Image (tube, rainbow, N blue to C red; front, side, top):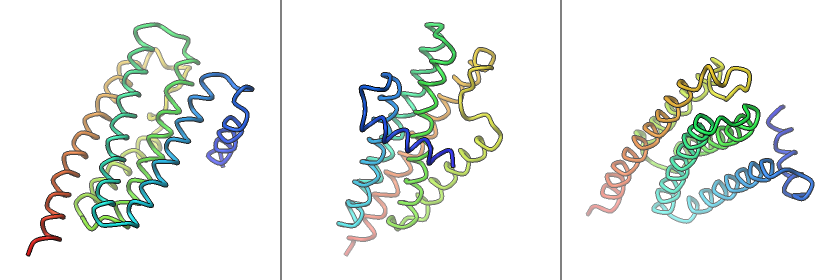
Length: 184
């Protein structure tokens, strides 16, 4: 239910940007960007086999960019000693978008890509995110931010490493899939 409330806030911010802060507008634009990527991925997947693979690669690159934004925000919070509430408001929307895109990416891989390996890797990454969310160590909490800064930095680097590995796996599977589809 909280997700639906957040989406209502996002749409309200997009419709009335002057009534909201810069951070709220940034968060709303992140969500709008994620929606556009999801719609573009869906339409590209319907057009052609290659379009589905290209859309999946684009989505994985965007996931990598969001992982880097997360790492840079954590490093900024550590270096500049910002207000912990501001850090929480900056980092958590990036993580929310990251999870939403990971879900969409897994659904896309299951239904539109004909590679079991890519689907399994994307699902494992999604299950790992859900496991970390279930344990309660995924999102940034302002009350314990300074104690957990080292852990958050390690996790941000882990996100980047996982996304790089997923992108390399995607490239290898895409090549094998296209060769097997178009081989004579």
